[in-house]
Length: 290
Image (cartoon, rainbow, N blue to C red):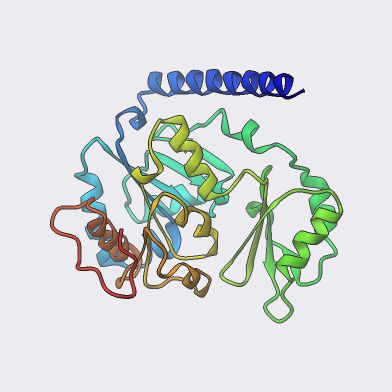
């Protein structure tokens, strides 16, 4: 039985590796910068990349002058059109990678090529209609507007006066035989995603696909929907204007709490981890060493 099981697993692994190689070859043809990248900055958009004009101007100059080996990406709760509009308005250089809709979508470069391997990877055990039906009568939840919903994302507003108990809600899903990743942020937003989808899991997928160690990724965020990408083996920076739900990360290894807000905090984190010229700031007692 064990030998049969291992043979079956081996076939699945070989098939997945072939798909990754085919996807990688397609991206090479599209002249993606990813094959040349050795370090990667991935930042949340609202209240991390955006929100401080002076800091963003300094970060934008650095991104325009960055070497080819340093990739730039965003990971945001916004859907792709909204993310592109916000970045264009702020005159942010076009990212090499866009992780959008809280990690349920991945696109590459100016051509916005979708990652063909990501949708089949995250659709496992995803029953969108059944989840929507179960959550329709959940007290304290109200669906967000239609433009915030997608094939792999259900988004809700949480009533702060009568918030749903996330632990009890997860138990209710399990009892119904449903599987989902519940991401609660800013105390008022709830995103329901496939179990394999999130900003953090999208970054792990990119690391595997492009043969980059997770330590090559510097990730920056400010809220609960950034939580999963800020922990693990990545190098992380939490900007000073972060939401209270990220306080639990303080003191963790490879999670740097910046003194500056928004883009200025991202720059501070880049200096701390050696992604910019000049020495990193001296470590302080309340900040985790890199």
